[in-house]
Image (cartoon, rainbow, N blue to C red; front, side):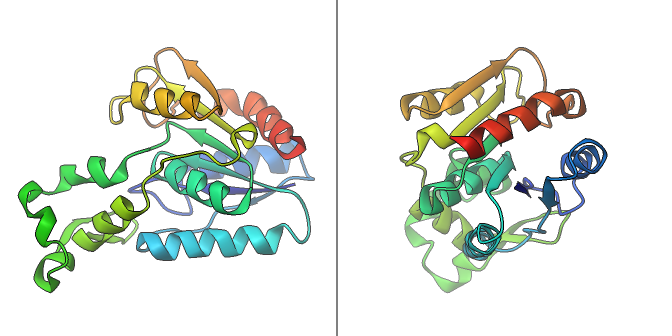
Length: 210
């Protein structure tokens, strides 16, 4: 089985959860190969990178995505496009809205096509992605409106997520028929990820068998 870990915003290929997942599988599941692509690119490039990677890996073994936060958004989008199973951790469902926290220019949406606005950097991530207004436009054009393969999607959501609204994520995925597991307490970063790895591996195995 191949597992592609899709990191979130302000992270990179060496994210804590991605490394923990890889170390755990190396120790207990030698038949599971972990891939940790660096996705600090514009959203169109991220989507293309992930769809190409899934297509390539599926030639050799069953592949599943595990996406955290913004990585959960991309994992859902790629799953919709490819049919690849996905396990989501506190997934972002409205990045076109939530990423506006980096800008005060809420009133210029209608002018976003203008060159001087669309290329304006609103935030630089620690991994090196310079987010622009055109990226917000891309996210707005590719909003999550459905889950095309709900039997292949599981969302693990912390009730005390301090960054994203867990109720919105729960509502969206439940209405789409995906499995939603609400966990009490916790935080956006899923700080207890290491303790949950046995359950997470079991979920991944179930997803590739669905």
